Amino acid sequence: MPAEEKIRVLIVDDIDETRENVRRLLQFDRDIEVVGSARSGKEAIQLTQQIKPDVVVMDINMPDMDGITATEEILKKMPFVQVVILSVQGDPSYMRRAMLAGARDFLTKPPSIDELTAAIKRAGKMAQEERERSAGTFPSGAAVPGASHGHPVGPLGRIIVVYSPKGGTGVTTIATNLALSLNDPQNEVLLIDASLQFGDVMVFLNEQSKNSVADLSPRAEELDPDIVKDVCFKHSSGISVLAAPPRPEIAEGVEADHFFKMLQYLKQIYRYIIIDTNSYMTEVVQTALELADLIVLVTTQNIPAIKNANLFLSLSDKVGIAREKIIFVMNLFDKHNSISPEKVGETLRQKIHYVIPFDEKVVNLSITRGVPLMVDNKIHPISKTIIMLAEGIRERAAKMDDIGMDLHLKK
Ligand SMILES: Nc1ncnc2c1ncn2[C@@H]1O[C@H](COP(=O)(O)OP(=O)(O)OP(=O)(O)O)[C@@H](O)[C@H]1O
Ligand SMILES: [Mg+2]
Image (spheres, rainbow, N blue to C red):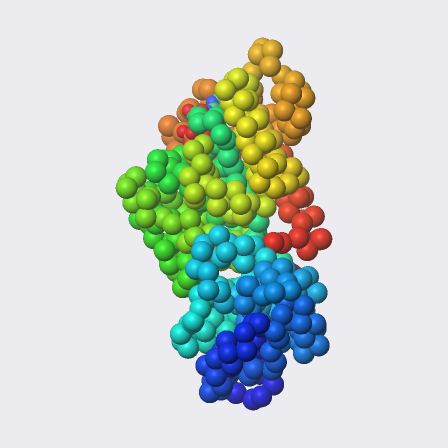
């Protein structure tokens, strides 16, 4: 491989010996060239700007500025650089923070030579692809046909979580119809049933899938577009579906960290990832909410549902979920009920954006037949509101793209 195509690596660690060890591990690899090293977060930012490496191998605990903050700063200034975090903490919360800061990979110290070189090569390839993409090789935001194995450089996917802190409010009905409404050949949709124990998305579609989240999520580290295509169910409408596990006990095997990594990968393949959830906040549901670009929060005119929506809003304020991410929807709306959407909006200090009418007969029939309204009854008022919701989501996603907003794959 010619020198100019080698993956250029910067090593950041405050301990001399660790830097030296990492350098030693990499010195005989013909595809990798260590182009510099830094002893602190601040020095890392400065050197990255000067020498423009492809990959930064970054420690977390450093005296002046920790590696996660340094990662954030670097990616703000140099979005093509890929950061691989190397930390003594195997703690999943560290890993999440690192990934949220935009790090490409996370290894625990001391890494094996194979682990380290594989992570650097993956990241290096990504850096080169992102450079090419921005140089105009691919139209921005468009899916890239035949994206290379393991490294699709396709759409910057948006995760939309449909959630209600009260069961039975219509989350699955909305998620399924929303997925159908958002899908088109340029904007592929994946519908994930994250109501893992008793998910019923496949029932709503009157289909059966041989695979489920439990088949894809444990392989989060080794995903490629073929594996994803293999596991996901392709519905006749064109949407892909990642079903809930066939039996509740299998759901227990789905780990939140794997789910997290899986979602991050899927964002590179699908333009919209719609996640159906259950009201009980499992770790998987929490992970989905944490990664959501938008949250469709569903309530009804029923007092417990409103009370729980209020609790959810307070909780999301506390954990730092921006209110702009929340799209508040009232389902099962009955105009004879005196609890109006306006009243609920005022009481909860959160405007209701969309109101979906109650029509038991039509919705129940669609579920019984397994034919969603969006397939054969687009003119029904329920469908029309969901189409408006989809339009609102498209607009918001486009705005996010414009301002380059992405926590996980910095553009
Ligand atoms: N707009 C509507 N009008 C009338 N009935 C509706 C409407 N939306 C949903 N339903 C009905 O409400 C019930 C619950 O819907 P759905 O399964 O979508 O809710 P959910 O929030 O996903 O429930 P769960 O908590 O069990 O997952 C279903 O029987 C469905 O037919
Ligand atoms: Mg449901």
